[in-house]
Amino acid sequence: MKSLTVDGLRLAYRLDGDEHSPPMVFVNSLGCDLRMWNPQVAALSNSFRILRYDIRGHGQSGPSPEAFTIERLGLDLLALLDELSIGRTHICGLSLGGMIALWLTIHHPERIERAVFANTAARIGTVEGWNARIGAVESGGMAAVREVVVARFLSEPFRARQPETAQWVGDMLEATIPEGYIAACVALRDADLRHLIHKIQVPSLVLAAALDESTPPAQAQELHDAIRGSELRIFPAVAHLSNVEQPDHFSDCLLSLKEQA
Image (cartoon, rainbow, N blue to C red):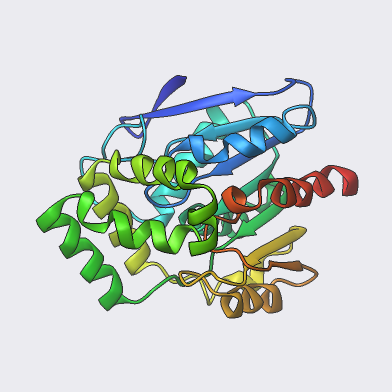
């Protein structure tokens, strides 16, 4: 694990794969760290130079000294790309990471080769829902939301088939610093990119999951309809962390980016 300082904050990151391969940056979901992409690294490191990092307040990155926005998270990623001399990159973001990917693609399209927006939306959740989540963590810590979040992350049949993976995801969530999680919840609560997504002209793939309650397929359809020329794929019988539930299918979708390049 390596790190660098961005906006006075330590950002932890990791590079995998052949340095001469085209770059691909992965951006994490809320309450997850860069390990959530382990299945994709195993499948794609022969095809891409993979950059993973922990957003502020998550994983091994430092906690933010103040509240932040989706814009601030996007600027963090932009600074990381600059520091690593990555001019243009493929990008894949899931959930919160997908919204960060949307922001970067909207405002800095010159830096994006192709974009994958997975299990995300231009507007995620409701003010009331986020406030309830924030209140639960404030009063009971991360353990207070573990059960309900993991149930949204992973479908019930998957959790029954792979309890070890469900345990791993829950442990990753619970290890998140409460202050970092709350700050990211506030950023999501206050973010709305619906009036901007029509500006995206970068080749884009929208991935959704039929059982996703957090960012349901109807919202993926809205992204697809707004982003001219985008492709939409919906995974059946899968919940929010589609890259974990169907890692092979997810990775195959990303390999298609290289084939199209």
